[in-house]
Length: 221
Image (cartoon, rainbow, N blue to C red; front, side, top):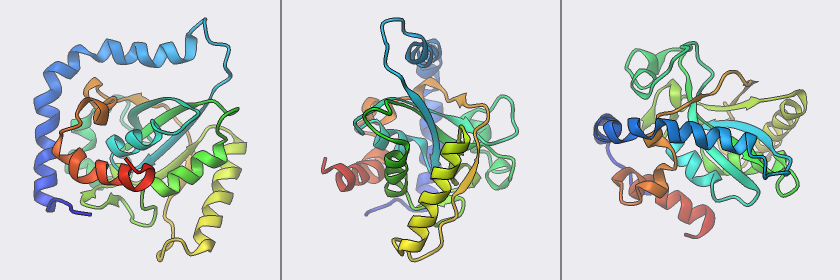
């Protein structure tokens, strides 16, 4: 897969948030409404459950899981860190990129367990990124890009541990899996311009060179 040099990717990461910030800020209330509507809609009698994963840039993980049948909603955000008010600029800052207290770029998935099980979501999680590279995915480097499963109950923890052992023992990856399996904490919804990023920015250079090839590989798009 063709990728940008590291400096070019870093420049893009700095440019896109600034360019989109003004428009994205106006949509923040809409993003909050999107989150609340999924959990409180009186017209829905469907029983849904929640999964929280981190696997590199949340533009990529969101783009993958939004396409999976049974997934009802995917929200990009930050979790697993110490900052009570994380922002994209803070999470991506040079000081935090090397900090063990940094948040991960993560996605919170609302899914219908009658259509897709947590086990199946875990299978997609392993396919969607490289879980053997510590604090990086390709040219995206920093603790915010770590691989992590944030479990919401003991059952999810047991399934995640068993799934990781199965993947590690299978030899699917030449290097050991370094994914963290940790309790889910507060999930901070990311800025509005990060939500549905690929759908809203299909001609974005990062999407074209990184995410689009991944989607073609996984879904034949």
